[in-house]
Amino acid sequence: MVNSMTGFGQSQGKVNQTTISIEVKTVNHRFLDFSFKMPRELLVFEDAMKQKIRQYFERGRIDVFINIMGEGIRAKHIQVNWKTLDQYLQGLKEIKENRDVSGDIELEDLIQLEDIFVEEEEAQVDEKLEEKILEILDDVLKNVHTMRQEEGSTLKQDILNRIQKINRQVNELEGQIDLIQKQYRERITERIKEHLDSAVQDESRIVQEVALLTDKSDITEEITRLFSHVEQVIETIELKQPIGRKLDFIAQELLRETNTIGSKSNDVRISKIVVALKSEVEKIKEQVQNIE
Image 1 (cartoon, rainbow, N blue to C red):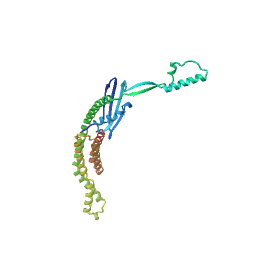
Image 2 (cartoon, rainbow, N blue to C red):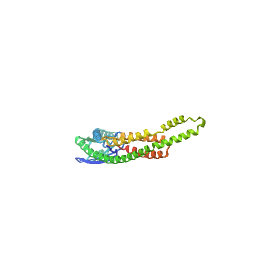
Image 3 (cartoon, rainbow, N blue to C red):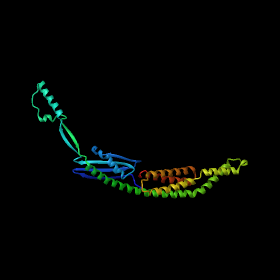
Image 4 (cartoon, helix red, strand yellow):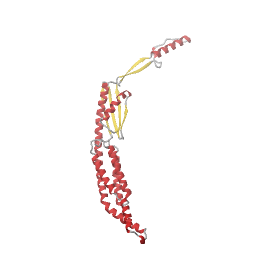
């Protein structure tokens, strides 16, 4: 199952006179990572929202933005701070008694004093609000999931196209093996003969050395493993489960075998094929980084 880890969705709903807006953005991440930006009174619902998200996603960074508009979800109450007010009044009384100060204290004088009134909030967070938030979040997550599936389909087709190119390139490499080995043996034989005195040439020893060097340059095993990795990609991409990590591992193995072939051969034709092969594998690795 090829799902991208990139997606976006938004939705909103109302509870009484309160409007709740939720946005969810997801990007690639090695694991399932959460980030919530919302009013602090909603923190009590964070675990429930995480459980809801886990129903849809197994990998990716999930950014959740929740905005509250309208009445809000807390009722505000203004209380008189009687203790502070009494202290003010006592102080004013002492001023009048100890200093030559006259006049009455009016209400408008009192309301200018600091800390006379205290604003208190009463939480109104209830099950009804939680149900609505989870309902809106579920709607958003469905949209995000759909977007991740659609992008995943595009990624899947791109990877399959590239893996077919890789398969053709590996076939081309395989077709060059016999000719390259023959040419390699001939070059090595000539170079050995050039550095040996004709009087002490040992043909059997030369044959042994050439065979050993030729074996070290043989790329048959690497080609066999490349074919195997190509088949693994094709099989894995059809699995009905998150496959990002597995595809990433296979892509690394494809690159490793390709690099080994490049290091073993100095043939110009092989080098050109290896360069093209590495280019396709690198592009697959890039795409795989965004697959769940």
